[in-house]
Length: 91
Image (tube, rainbow, N blue to C red; front, side, top):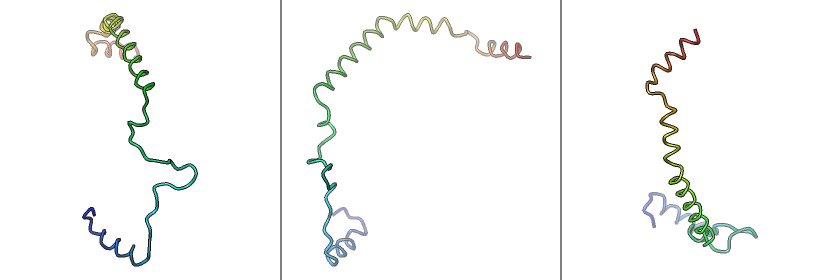
């Protein structure tokens, strides 16, 4: 089957001891059929992703430049000098 070394031994043991393979899950809570992961997502999920993408893109385009300039203005030009100054204040 898959070419692994123990496969032949396992098949011989299965035939000799009349072992039948089990199903994936048994019981009342077992799924009726096993599907692909894409089957779990419906149209409402795709719509939700589209709306969130549009909103986040709109906010990024609207406020992105302001946020970037605020970040750049808040960062020190010489980080080593700022760290050294802070350490001097601690002494």
